[in-house]
Image (cartoon, rainbow, N blue to C red; front, side, top):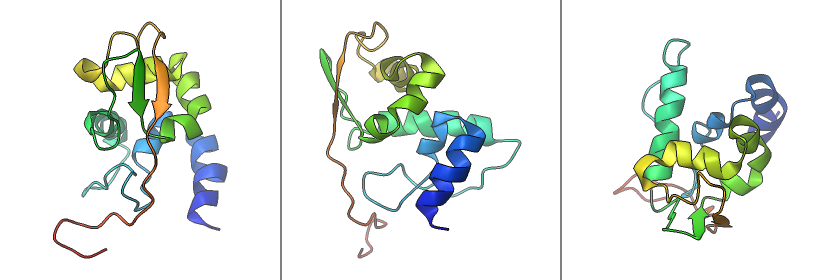
Length: 130
């Protein structure tokens, strides 16, 4: 089984929680950052919320903008169904986790979503070669 199959066939259907997209890391530059602590039954809900806020606060991955067009990670395009199912729309989901970074048009569903080009290059640690 590949990691993609694990995500698509087990994790997404089992958990039905779009926040998993902030925890799954494919080691590319545009992926969410890898955390240095384990997800446990006690902390997973809080950690997934934290990961969502951190991912949307990262301007290199989600430039956002002020509207009427808002640029976000391609992850929101690829898994739009997951995000919309959780919040009614992708825009509202993004607004919930972007907090004060969110332009007002997100909550009102009047923003046009644009998607940042995904950088598939290897995500190396600072000071290390990829």
